[in-house]
Image 1: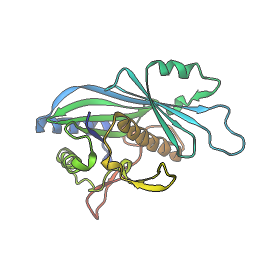
Image 2: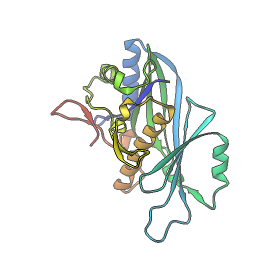
Image 3: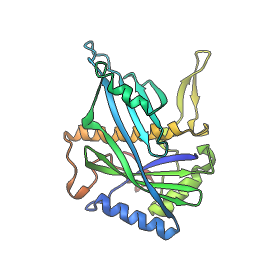
Length: 252
């Protein structure tokens, strides 16, 4: 696989998600892309039970599936303090979680997924995802993969140009937030700034980006104080908007 980027798409006021996805699909086909089936990425979160009584954050296990890897289950274990451990297992991991009900409980009300059409255009694979949680529409999430590149720093401009070409808007020149420089601890116990955009891209990087975006949608629902979808399938997930100052696509 190549470098993959996730881009939330801003829903114009008064437009439904189905209408926008139909428009984007027609635009891709007009550019010469071919329809190449469907895709699905889902996420279910399990929380530790019982929860700590001393105010300490509880542990969570995020279990994700990606239709590109039907034989694998991706799991990200979060200790509640920002530290995560990523695991790739076979599908028996799902059965294991079902047998651990005394330790982890599923937060079924926050089960979330992105599904939709998959397109191929030259070396690009583009997926137009409709994000839903408990069958309520939350927004549009676009996945774009550049199969000929495995390091984002070498091909971000190419991906950005492709996004601008079919979205019809200017995309921010900065690397997406997932690839922002991170502070890591070296083997010598020293802190060091790590440029993630120079790393070789792996399937787990796609999964982590989905978890990041799904978490944003879940947080928005919590802030809104409800689970309902907007009228006519309008977006109620995290907004993405074009900045009038730079004409780019930003998350607030």
